[in-house]
Amino acid sequence: MSAENAVEYRHEVGPDDVAITPEASKQLANLFKDVDDDSIEAIRVYVAGGGCGGMTYGMTFTDRKTEYDKVLKGDGYLFYVDIVALNFLRGVEIDYATRDTGATFVFNNVFQTTGGSGLCGACGAATGGGGGCG
Image (cartoon, rainbow, N blue to C red):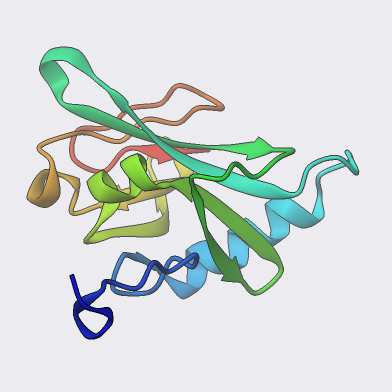
């Protein structure tokens, strides 16, 4: 492969990969600001096999970046997502919504890309096509 045909590896997650709504971005910054552990450096977005329900999506705090992580720099927070998970997240929108059961992060368009559902790593909530994290 010639240098002019080489694919450039990006270390950043862009809006063409994962979209984060303004409300979700605001809430992520608030969560990150409230962390009381100096070793926490980012919020990790992950995808796991969900059996017959498809893929599950979630977020958790992390204290380290791996060589396989890509980074999304938000206003007041960092997101780490490994390249395998990113392939399942492409086209997903992360939103923050208030529902009858409370306020939660929601992964929209997950069925469009992988046929999965969302799942919160912190509270375990799952809600069909747009699971969340409270």
